[in-house]
Image (cartoon, rainbow, N blue to C red):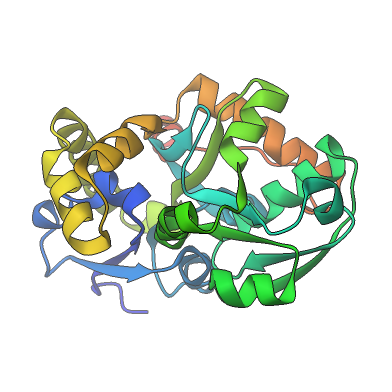
Amino acid sequence: MGANRPITVGRIDYANSWPIFHYAEQQLPMDRFRIEKRVPAALNRALKLGEIDITSMSSFAYAENADNYLLLPDLSVSAKGRVNSILLFLKKPLEDVLQGRIAMTATSATSVNLLKILMKLYYHAEPSFVTMEPSLDEMLAEADAALLIGDTAIQASWANKDRGLAVIDLGELWRSWTGYGMTFALVAVRKEIAERDPGAVADVLHALTTSKERSLRNLKPLVDKACAQLGGEPAYWNRYFHELHYNFGSDEQAGLKLYFEYAHRLGLLPNEVRMRFFEDHAALKVKNE
């Protein structure tokens, strides 16, 4: 790992992350930064292995290695209620699903473990789980219900208008149960990168924050992009981006803290999680020098 190599930034290329990244690349010079687009599970793995330096990542994967990472402040993909792209499709009545088999996407740890928490602590049920590639038809051929996330879930929800499957939005269910919103993704940096090149990390933080703010001031470019690449109507995408939240303030942190506590209680996370932030770490380092 050369000291002069570009800082590699991982990007979840689902529509729900677009506001954070849409304008960021033009602010990050290619000679100093490289952007890589992958599904959440691949980014989680790459950050852990040191193949990338900073990434948007699933909240659960951050928690698994929180001692090695710092969070970039006030950046997340969260929902106060309905999230529209973390969906459980049921081909049988709920009471049968709770005693049956659920197929889960292989692409994100946060949603999979949120489902396990809801099944155990909310429904007091213990269905069996099978991990599959994200194809609704293939999943429902093997199981009584299927969990899809991201753009695949959105497109399946449109197709479902003709099928009539019952659908549970996990963000909405979490809110109705706990009273909190849910944070599905965060942006984290490896600690050694923050130590070695805090200036580059600060540049990435500035680019992502600026992109978030600019995107949310005018959603039309994102709505147009979504319609062109993924289909659907402008009204759907306007509502979709408005119902997501991209900050990570005290409310979002409280909801995620509860999620981590439940995951730890169920043995899904081996350790309790203390969230640490890049800005706090940088300030402490300056104070100690």
